[in-house]
Structures are given as structure tokens and as C-alpha cells.
Image 1 (cartoon, rainbow, N blue to C red):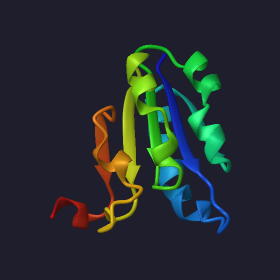
Image 2: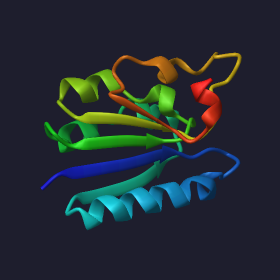
Image 3: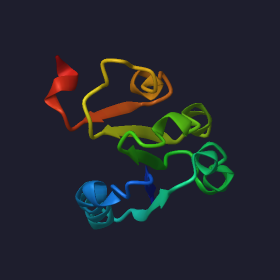
Image 4: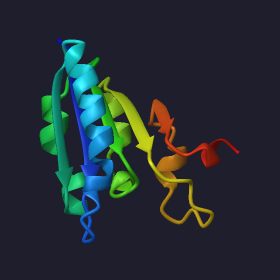
Length: 122
């Protein structure tokens, strides 16, 4: 049984409600397909970078998706790929013109990039 982890970062503005429809839609879709789905939100960037609990929980063939930009640049994408996890970054925002924190936007360790904004295709 495939395990799916859908995660997002939280911030001081408490914008997680904006990503909740995406999280719920994906969770319901994967669950309908028989997957075990875990969802959550992490407020502390250091906790994102040190997701050792995730590294010990996932197995080869599992699916990990990070929803939104908040905290996505702290995810240990390379470590997840080394473990054989299928990695996805669901980008909910246009790529910033001043790509200071957009290293995850072009990270070779991310298997798939899912785009919400058509501007990212331009």
C-alpha cells in the first residue's frame, strides 16, 4: 500500500487556509486510490530541514508532495530522492522575479513540479 505525505509550511500570517483546498483534494484523491495519506503543516523552518522522522517513515516508492512556497526551500529533497521517494513540489504561486528563495523551483532533486499558475510556463 503506497504511502503519501502531503505537507506544507505555515507562517506568521496563517495562510494555510489558502492551501487547504489543494491539500484536501489531493488527500481525498490518493485515499480513493487506496493510499495511506498523511497531511500536515510545519511552522518552524528548522523542523522542515530536520525531518528525520519523515526519512525514517518513508519507503522506496512512497510519494511526498510539498504544497506552496513557504518552507519548500528547507526540504531535504535530495535525501528523499536517495530514499527512493517520488518527490513533487506543488507551486501555488508564480516564480518570483527576484528568485532569492526559489532554489526549490529549479531543484534537480524534485521529480515533478506541479504548477498552479500559468505564469510559470511563460
